[in-house]
Image (cartoon, rainbow, N blue to C red; front, side, top):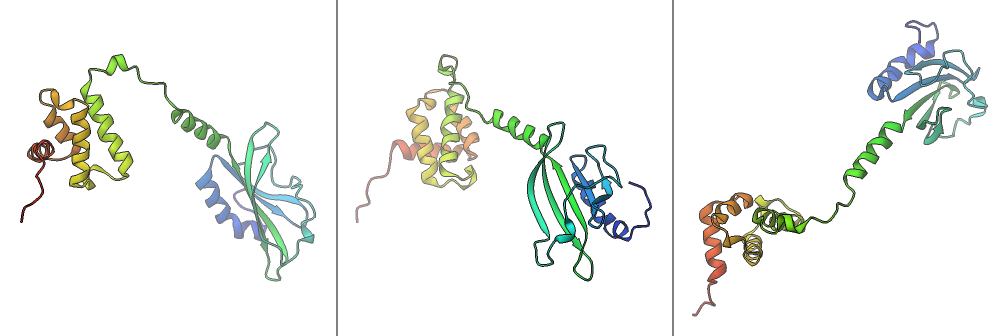
Length: 214
């Protein structure tokens, strides 16, 4: 659009339109429409060849009721090249409440849909793990057990209680992890506790204290 224009509406709303275009560009165009002539007043980040002075094709905007909603959308639009848009339109009124201009923001949904498809593919179910490759990998079993407890508890390792850690160590012991030399230090590091704490919990697990006698 021209850097300078005599139209008061464009001068008034240009900072708003430029701000939206800068924030969403290059994925959105911002268009200011003249309600009296049904033509484009100004356009930022144009997605098509239309320019100021071209028909807006918005319909009979002069029949908008002053009590009608001034913001419409988001609604879907389609460009001739097949791009899908999410659009919003805002009716701008003068001091008398008459519709003076319409501000439209058209967001290209293509990049968003591509990003969503990429994330969906990454989150797709994976093939079963080839167990023969991992049957002797005790670190994988350790990670599976500890990670499973983190997901089940819904809280980070730093917030695990003593009972939580005992449950993890019990499952690791049943999985044969502690039969491996130097497994305890690795488990302590994975659980984010000291080695002495890990050894103390293991001792308690193997020799639980009996009921107290008064």
